[in-house]
Image 1: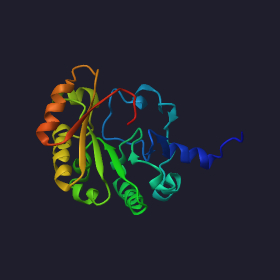
Image 2 (image 1 turned 135 degrees about the horizontal axis):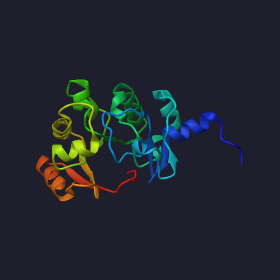
Image 3 (image 1 turned 60 degrees about the vertical axis):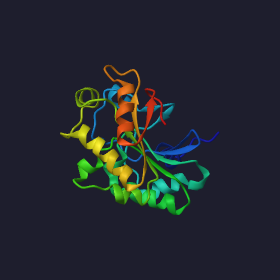
Image 4 (image 1 turned 180 degrees about the vertical axis):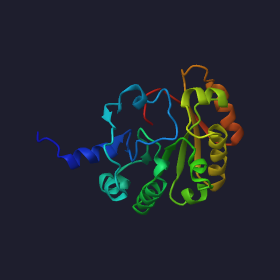
Length: 208
């Protein structure tokens, strides 16, 4: 079997198939420094995929790597960085996917409004069908313990983003990882239901 070219290897890092979806890895940058994140535990591998980026891809490169969006159940922004850090690139790709008949999900820390200094949820709703937001904890203290946010007010901003995103018309799910010290998954689910959004229990190191 021929050795993959550098271009082919790059495409496999920025767009990787899993669970019938195509997952997009567009940045390694993040607003959080989660103690459970593989990259903070000296590995860039998730479910046999090496997601280490040596440079960030352009929107055009990502679209080429996706191919036909309709070949997948969903196109999901999910790597070892926060995709909304590259908000303009994310939106360019999302619009391209929608134009090609695909469905778009963004797995996010929910801090894009805080970083941008404005509410971008209505803009996102034009091209994003659903959001999976990493809630991570039932209160701010536990959230800070595990996620080590770079910005003040991150926990409240994440919950407000979930509310605004729901109001903008996107399907919203909050998630928390079962088994992290101090995290009460049942309490997290209660908060999600009070916000009128769904909840999903996550398993550590499983992409989804």
